Length: 362
Image (cartoon, rainbow, N blue to C red):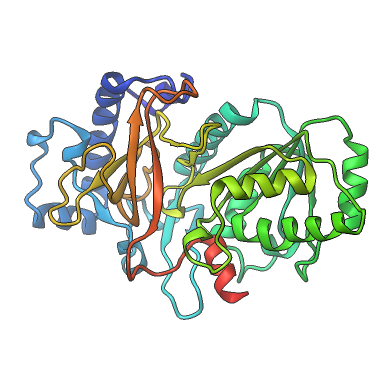
């Protein structure tokens, strides 16, 4: 299958057998491409004795530790073809990943994200509230995964407003006026989890006690960042949902899992509370002892594969997160593919998520 073939079908339509064939073909093709065009990747394959003739499944393909992108410049295109360099979030003193994109990879990232997110929000663009400050996309020092996330999701917004000012205070009058203009319409909200909780929910709850209310019952909130395991204010998914509904009537809430090293292939949370792998990607759980594939329900290290990366060898990566597969092709929401949960960061792994980084600084 070509990448366009993936784009031309519903994003959660492949069952296990069909996806096995499609991903094996595409990922083997990407492995060959990067072996031929990235000398560092080719040497790594040679070191592990990789034999392409021995591959019967995409599960057999080598994976790179995601941390390598902090230590090495890995490109499969000439420097002059790089149109964008993405960097991961990192606290002061931490190395950051650098991901090099050419026009094709950058365009395919955006097309993929549109396909995946639209399956949850609908195809139309909506008025959008960004739960962050406008400075995050203006200040180049802040513009990494956090800024890229905001710009990436902004394509789903028609008219947009930032809910916070550059002092991270809720723009009460601005949000009230925005909601008045778009009263009765579906509104998209996007933000990183800790900021949604700390600067949006808490302020809405405080204002409600003073008799000032906001009606977001027609809203759809997409949030991510994985802070729950890392800060003292952690709350469960159910409590997060309950508190948001109490504060402003918001019920349609979706977490997502993703990383700058595989931008575009995000894993959205369905209405059943499960994260889903789309046709464009997959999740494999590896046992820490020997990196063999874990069984459904067994906790291990998360490996992610993506059909997108052509400008850098990021199509098969071992993350620093742990989780487990909950099932495949049988989620009650009706979407095909694997669904899974994240348990958190591996012990001793760096704090590095967009929201986590902000939380540490805060």
